[in-house]
Image (cartoon, helix red, strand yellow):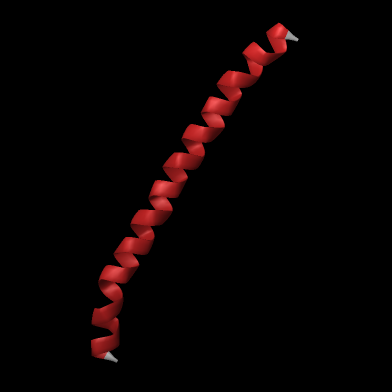
Length: 44
């Protein structure tokens, strides 16, 4: 059980870091879209 918990922690840390990076990427895409959206509304 101790070895299993030692194996699970790096996997959990890897998943957490990947989800954090993808979350930041989604946030930047959303921010970029919000930045450009008013220009699209003005043009339309």
